[in-house]
Structures are given as structure tokens and as C-alpha cells.
Length: 106
Image 1 (cartoon, rainbow, N blue to C red):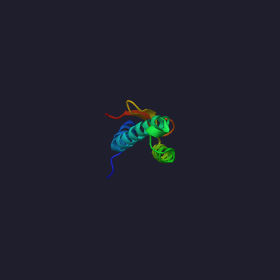
Image 2 (cartoon, rainbow, N blue to C red; image 1 turned 90 degrees about the horizontal axis):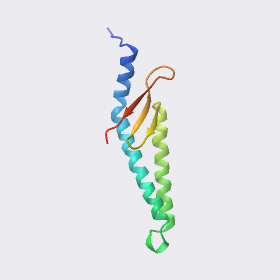
Image 3 (cartoon, rainbow, N blue to C red; image 1 turned 180 degrees about the vertical axis):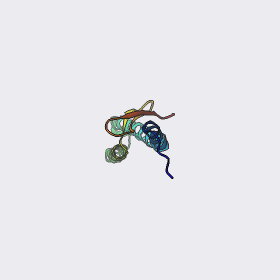
Image 4 (cartoon, rainbow, N blue to C red; image 1 turned 180 degrees about the horizontal axis):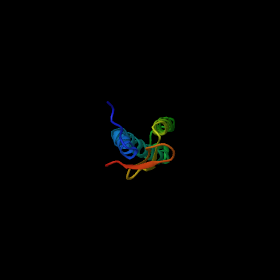
């Protein structure tokens, strides 16, 4: 026999179940964003003090692509990034527009 949970309990359980995955996605978003920022700063340095521009552009493109994939994964899960530092997600937890906020420990 299956026990039905109240909707609020199911909503909280969904958010809790997504916790480890959201934490991992949050780490990836922070790491790739930081790496991209560093590359963009390096790109502005004089040519003699940095790596070749095509290498930097390729690395920037790779990080941007992976950031897009992470946001697409969040959308598939009905989640959105609210804030990167601290990492906070908006999580769809019920029918319609019901959402919950999920904070990831740094």
C-alpha cells in the first residue's frame, strides 16, 4: 500500500532530493565563472605578458559553453540560479508557480 504525502511535504522532499545535484551545479557555475573572469582579465593584458589570444578565446568559449549547459540542466529540473555568491536556487516544487529557495553551503 502506498502512503500519500501532503503536497507541502512532497514539495520539501523534492527540494531536498535535488540538494546534492544543485550543490554540484552551483560549484561548477562558481568555478567556471571565476575561471572565465580570470581569462577575460588575462586577455586584456599586453601580448607579451599573456598566452596567445586564440588560446584564451578558445578557453573562454569552452567555459561559456559549459555555463550554458549548466543553466540548461537547471531549466530541465525546473530550477533557476538566483544568486551565485552565496549560491541560491529557485526550485519548482509544485503545480503551477509554487517555488522554493534552496541555499547551497559554500
